[in-house]
Image 1 (cartoon, one colour):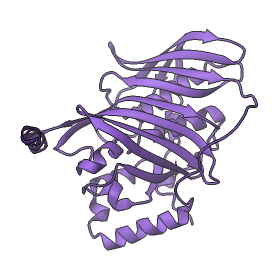
Image 2 (tube, helix red, strand yellow; image 1 turned 45 degrees about the horizontal axis):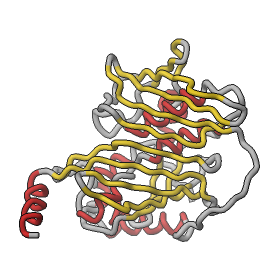
Image 3 (cartoon, one colour; image 1 turned 180 degrees about the horizontal axis):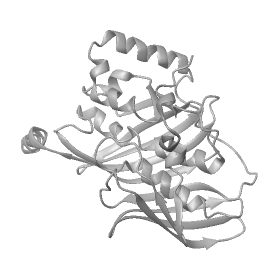
Length: 307
């Protein structure tokens, strides 16, 4: 069943794999183009992916990124280019580490350290995916939700996601798209809308981009709030990724995620990416700001006083 939406409307310059590949500007300096956004601020996943590609494009010994750890320091502007400055921290026969800073004007908005590893054999084990790997069933569930919910097509998040270069199919649409309280875990299928047939470095960047989509919602689910609500100020604070294998984001991947903790106006989320055949290809973790506002803050204050 083919569900790739709006791919034919993309120009070559608008293709995600083109946007995520920065252009060399000077020694160890790269310029990332503006990309699709859901508001005036730079999408965090784009900064992660472009920074990862800037570090990857300086690799000349066959190593591939196996992990990255980054901090979102200041809000970036979505309609402005980003300058990525790469510093080589160490390089050996097997591993290399690089730091990447993202700048807009005189403001450093993002910082990342990525580690690269030359592929080699080793012992293997991995947890199994806790959900059936049934994309057709998930598509049918999404279609059913759209038919049963008269307002589903008008939901702001649903409309915005239809314009994004990554296609998303949640296992439970009412939990991901709805506003009621839900246990702090969710899962959704993801893939690139228009196949890229990209190289291993870009495939990692595509997954990195996708890993920041919807992720922080896990920590908000049990509290009946969502990003963009007037009840909460929400933004990503940091992000970490571990690549276990090279993904193929032309194909579906199931992102299984949960939030084990929230408190002090912050929430923690973690998750694993599984390929269609069940292989775990990546692990992600993120902490986000989820500061209660207005009535939500007043209600929390009343609960604390009554405790």
